[in-house]
Length: 339
Image (cartoon, rainbow, N blue to C red; front, side):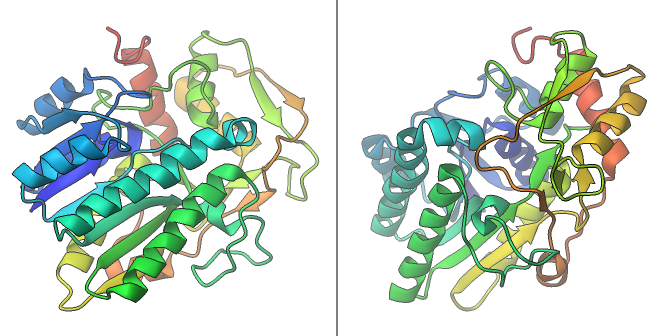
């Protein structure tokens, strides 16, 4: 299949591009490199033997989108392009709506124009907000507690309306829990610009001596050790889940609108992650407690029975795999992709 991958040079997008290329798909990456590096293209080529096509542009750039759709017959689109930090979204909500919502609208309008109707959307477990039951199933109410989650849910609602208006669309909405890890080669990993917003890359920089300590936001949550609990999933498992979703919806003889959780089905606390990373890295990781961050919730872990059953997909890598792969990426790439 000929696949357009928006945000394909980013953390999750790049791992998914590798899986697509390994399985014989043709890939065009659209990325503005606001939180990624063009150097990743050489590494993808080294790992797969194939260099994906690249369009350097913003997903809100309808003129460029129209140009590439008019010259290339895409079979499907995987949409990763967006901004994703919960804390930042509470400070700059306009950025989140203009990028995540308006960018999705621009992309979907061009897809509709060129009759490309197979779409995989990079959503988030934040759409559930603070659920009352665990594990969290796709049937749980959606009530996000921060602008990032609300921007993702806005796109989900839009996709539901598109499908209701034209049920020939084939749409998979993949609600990620907490992607971590790196490619087992140590060549591809999470490379945030500036101070990392997510726990695992911050942890790895503390272990490497780049930052002095980990800040644990909240010690009084109603969890076993008082710190937040999350369902962490290895990014390579997540990438394989995207491939399984693509195969599932594209092979359907009818339209599809399918929200699905991608996670492991179990939660780890912040302190458990710190302890596991100390083992993986062989280094002591200092940390201190701070106040809860706005928009954060106590715990979140997935019911993954739908994706396990429909996609015949299950997360294979465990917590030590996640920590070991992140550490391998960190020590081999102390400056990220800026080598």
